[in-house]
Image (tube, rainbow, N blue to C red):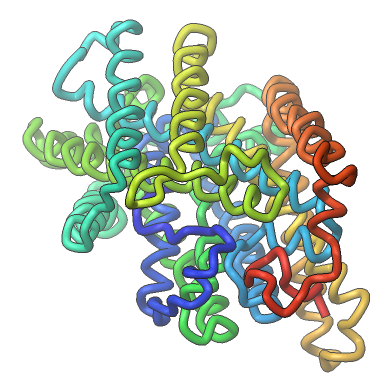
Length: 477
């Protein structure tokens, strides 16, 4: 997860008319969104399961590619900004659209908490080396609120800074995925299944964690309104970007597993730093990796802080989120309430996790994965709905069979990811998602001025001057 260059997923008219991304830029958008700070902590989160976690990673990659293809197919039919929110609303109605947007919003701010925990691990390479909880919380809060302040001022990172942060995050990952493989030692891997449970249980649990690495693969479809020739470029960018990240992830994680002894990896807060130190025989190389991860993390947090506000603002403008999320201030039209509320929630989750959870990063990752799977699941269901309703009429038999197979794989993968999250995570996740139901009822309450519901107001026959975007987009054909 990452990158400030995640385009706004809102259904804003400006986004619809600003075709700024070609195929290379759209692919870079996907790659930059998927790869954030979390990957730098991922090997440690997977270490308790042993090398069998790599098997889970391969299976997750297959599922992620199936999801990427599914999003690509959906964007061919609905080339509008909004991604999962748009597909859900057009296929299944307003409540499905709201619930998808709500779940995606939770993923954004909960994901920020996961990013900042991984970021703290690399900051503590230089300070708070004893990992005192109070100091770790203070560092995490700084990491959350500095990007929030930047967003509140309306400042956007310039393109040159974006290029630098992208290169810096790729240097250690690219090195480990290539040259790092030359330093792998079989003795460092430990027991193949170190979980102490069944192989299937270990694969399911590790897979739920590994899925966090691919959150963001939907970015090109979310920003489809900004992409030139979206019916062609969005599907290709989504698949190409996901495959590029998959190669980096799989080979980089394999190299870390093989260069850091298993016992050390279990307690490592900065596994890529430890791997580089092991290869170079000193601390200077690991310090460079830590510095790169810190810069990458700030960029990721800045971008996702923006997304935390932009997605609910899009839904609010369609009347599906409380109107306060649509209010902006300043010359830069900053959605201040969305930024502040998301940062407060991420801060509370971070503090709660540091004081209650024994595996802070892992627990938050599982929560954000669960809430991310819901938009993925609904999007795959929307694709299957279209195939069942119209596939025979509009697709040849071979294409229909292929699309149905891929969509069913994406659905099965989403269900599998949910059951691998664990009962505690499912409880917390469903609780936060279901909190959206009273929020939806409140949004849909009768309007005192007109004696009608907000929903009825929105669904009145749209005139020719209706604003463009998902609110007036045609239903799936």
